[in-house]
Length: 561
Ligand code: GLU
Image (cartoon, rainbow, N blue to C red; front, side, top):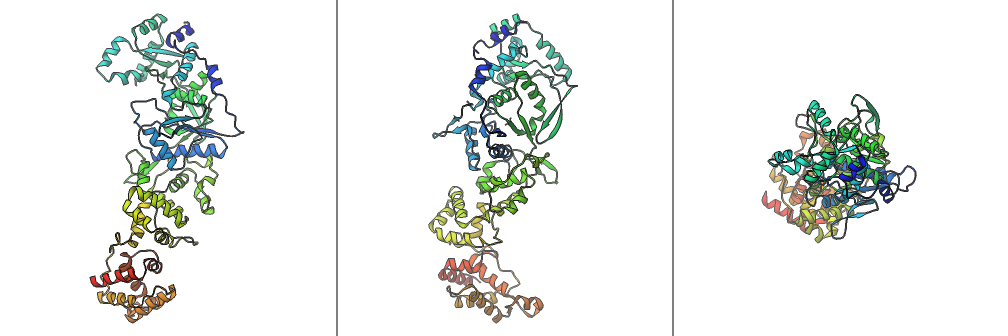
């Protein structure tokens, strides 16, 4: 068969040659060892937590090596595409500090545009490029058309015609598949001409020369040495609307864009044989691959399950709403990605995760386990090292969007908010009171009258008369200018007067000799002033509230008792 003639028949409009394309997409000039990586999402909805994995690995590998990290939008499946998803995705990633050197970006009007010379970076705009290579493969007898005949079209008419034709693929059954393959390969130029004349659509298939009995050794940088059975499937390169399949677009794009390392989910491993064949057919050098294990979670019975779309923790929008600081989420991602990250971080508490020497070798080959408790621990650990100003600004930004009432209070008296947020900060063992911004109101909201309420009741075992007496004695003696020791000595004296141990050692030695101890009396006061058993340092809290407010709250409690 005259393959050049066939190629012209199928792609009459394609005039550019692969050589011309290669010149348009020159080899990148980068320092030795620089990695070129990409994130290549399909904009099919919200951003999944699991998506942060390939993103972070790609970003780190590129930027640690002085390379390039770019964003390519894989929007070739319009059935799955969600309007505005790509734009939202770029914004979400930017929120986590993930910025791309090149690729699809948002312009000032909020629309996607290109940055860089290897674009377009949206696959749906790269049609002509794929067709150049499709034509080349046909002209070399390595790909062939597979038409949908009139009868088939009619039969499909009853079904969802468009999608059926577009993705027309082989039968599941292996024997049937062989038969279909042989039949499809066996065509004449006349048949092609006739089909084209009738306007019958075709998909373009790769003519596989593979033998599944044979295996190709392959090294994945995460999974290690693999033995891949050769591909023997004449898989689809172009769908009947001329749009490429993932396989074909992957080969053409990552070649032209100069990707050195493909970082993607392990669900693509079974397709690797196809890609090996495709790169060989096209004469492209293969990039290196990192197949990342899927993110797992524990179900109610303690069994490992994939963290699926609907699971709590999957949707990145939730993190923003709940109020996780982006840095905390990224630190957690790092903890999951590199087994030695936590140890490094403990030794370098003041450093950012961006200073950590990320290593492919330390990545887990099996699925990481997603765990909210761990995320919260990491988060508390990060935030406790921030100064109050920083906490305040992140908190305020969150509150403006998700709790405007709280935001108004925070803004109305910044010094007051900063004073509360400063409690327990800065020392060797900083307090770890909250992991997310939505917890902060519960922690410090009592400072504001509009959020102040008595949440905790006094335990039953204390005599109300004692509580009342302690509160009255306290407020009678309270002097805001007392230093902390004097303030506490007064509480001790009140305790002793009421038959509560002023000294904890004494109390422990003989608890039956007392009604309680000074910690109990402090609690009486704490609940009256903050509404809670657990609150930040009471002396400082009173300093912030001022004598009048303290007296008002204590009086109210006395009246209530
Ligand atoms: N669009 C593919 C996906 O979302 C990209 C895989 C890849 O990175 O090559 O799974």
